[in-house]
Each structure stands twice: as C-alpha cells, then as structure tokens.
Image (cartoon, rainbow, N blue to C red; front, side, top):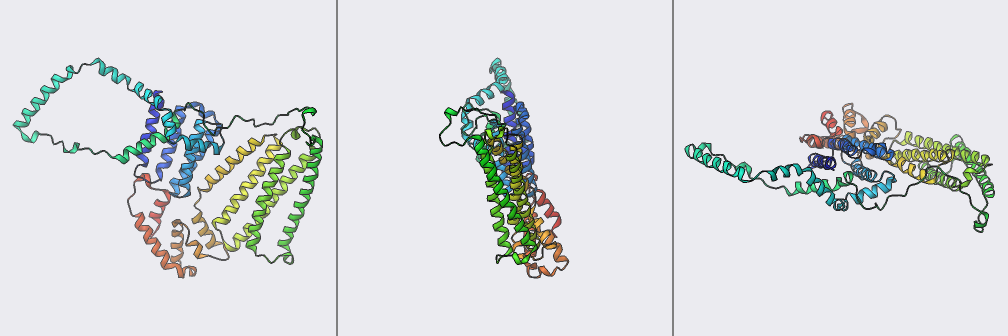
Length: 473
C-alpha cells in the first residue's frame, strides 16, 4: 500500500506540474511515459496482459502525435486513450469500448470515493513512523530552548535593528485553482493505482477465442431449424451465386475504364463516391454472411471443404473489389488532388480490407465471433491513432502543387498553418498560381510569426511550433 500511495502521489504531482496553466504539447509524452511506468511498477501483473500493453502503446502514439502537432483531434483522442488505458488497467479483458466506458466512469469521483478509506489508511501507514517519533517526544523538551532563543534574538535585534528579519515574503496566498487542479489529478488518476471493491458496469464476461463443437439432440431441436447438411448446401449455393455476381461486376467495372462507350452520364466523382458506398455495404454484408454461416458447428462439419473454398473466394473477390475502388480513387486524386475526404476513403478501404483479413483468420483458425468483434475494435482504434501522427495539411499542399492536374487553392487556404512554409517557398519562386493569394498568405504568415514569437514554456511547445518558428521568414 505504501508503494501504491507513493506512485499515486508522484503521478498527481507530475500531472499538476506538466499541465497546470499549460496547453498540451511536449508535456503529454513525458506524462504518458512516466504514468505507464508508475502503473506497471504498481501492478506488475499487467505487464503480462496483451490488452493492457496495446492500450499503453496506443496512448504513447497519441501522446507523440500531440507533442508533434499540438491541439486538435489528436488532443481529443489523447484524452480518450487515457480513459481507455484506465479501463484496461482496471479490467484487462474488456473490449475497447467497454474499457473507455469503464475509464470514463472511474475517472469521475466515483472511484475516488470507493477507495477513500483505503487511501486514508494508506496515507496514515505512510506517515506512521513520523507520528510515532512525535509521540515519543514531549513538547516541553523543545519549549524552553525555543523560548530562550527567541528572547536572545530580540535582544540582538534591539542592539542592531538591521538584524531584524523581514518576514513579508512569507505572505502566502492560496491558489484555489491550483488546489482544484491537484484534486482533479488525484481523482482522475485514482483508478490507475487503487482497485475498486465494486464490479465495473461495462466489464464483459470471459469469452473463448476458439470455437468448440456443441452437440445437440434431435429431440430438442426447434421446429423449422435447418439441419447442418442442409444449411451447408444452402450456404454453398448462396456463395456460388454471390461469387458469380461479384465476378461479373468486377469485369464490367474494369471494362468501363478501358471502353469509354460503356461510361454512363454520371461524373467521375459521383462514380467514385457511389462505388465507395456500395463497397462498404458489400464488404460489411460479406463479413456478416460469413459470420452467420460459420458461427457454430458448421466449422466442424466433415464435408464442408467446398463451402470453405467458396467462402475464401468470396473474401478474395471482395478484397479485389476494394483494390479496384482504391485504384479508382487514386485516378480521382491524380486528377483533382488530395483532400481529407479522399484520404478517409483510403483509410476506410484499409479498414475494410483489414476486416476481411480478420474474417479469413476467423474461418481458418476457427475463432469465435467475439474474437472477430474485439480485434476489429482494436483495428479501428489503432488505425485512427496512427492516422493522427501524419501532418496531412502539409502533405496535401505538397502533393496538390506537385502532382494534381487541377489545383484548388481555395481548399488549400482552408488547411492548417503547417502548409505556410511550402507556400512561402512557392511565393519566392514567383509561382503564378499564387498571384491572387499572395497577400492573404503573407498576412497569415505575419500573424503566425507574432504567435510563435511568444515565449512558451517547454511543456506547451510542439515540434510543429518549433519548426514554424525557425522556418517562417
């Protein structure tokens, strides 16, 4: 308990020092790295929990994203990742969403009140040696020497008034906001170090990653339930028809790109967007069908080889559809440039392809549906976190100026300030595409330089801010 109290006190002190009257910057990476170390030192058993390890890694990724780019979506996700980390510290077997909900509830005053008596007894045991030492000493032992010393000090000050000590500097004012911030840190970080006595509301029951065969008697089978072999035949017919349909669709879509006569009146942008929406629905439906037919004993059916082959072909064809949509989106980007929406098309395609890989793994290794759902949550959580590491405004500006056939400067002007050094270099090169925007860009550069000229504490600075301070002229 002493170790827990000390580690909790260090975490609260560090939280107060790094974030009080500061904005998020370099302080996030220092705080997260130290906090993870303190929690691991307090609960060594967590080092063997893969879920906890992954949540700690994602929190470090997001802390680095904030230290790099500063406030924004990365800052919001960093706070969410802290709640997820708290949830996995309290219940390592949770899902990502369950951990976030538990972390959110526990970070409130509920966990602090639940552990108040435990904290009080721990602090008492920590200072028990000091109190024992004070009880062994009588006040009279110090009263007489202190009184005589004070009298002689008064005599010396009478003899030389300059010897009088001015105690005006001891006029201490209590900072109420600082006290409140310390209490906030203590409450929020409490569940990381003290295990509550009550059951968490969003902690899932233990689940099995691998499916096991369940035997059912015919007499207990419900009326209308399709027998296993008939369900197998139904699935074979369904997947054969779906594979045939998606193959024809892929061939027709590729022929449209090669033969302009097959093109419709719809614009290229509309085709890409509608194709992407249809792709998401198609792949989600594909995963749902596979999960339905391979939910139980069909995985252990002795003659299900044909169904497995058709299911794998169905996954491969859906992956091919995703790759084809990726290619169409790339053609669109080459013509009109990058935007955040087009980047998110790539991210969504990556997630859907990852979902297909996880579905293939579920069938191949006979995993449960709960396993597929949990791993999909981790895939989305990790992908979004890594997405926030990239300076997309800077990348979009560079790509559109360098490769896009049509440059939309009005869109580029809406991007983040990290695009300014590139635009500044283009102005110096007398790029004709910036003639109409030169004054607006130079005005924004002056405004940004005035902001960067403010001396910020190292805790609130970021890599982007330091780079802009050195780069902008």
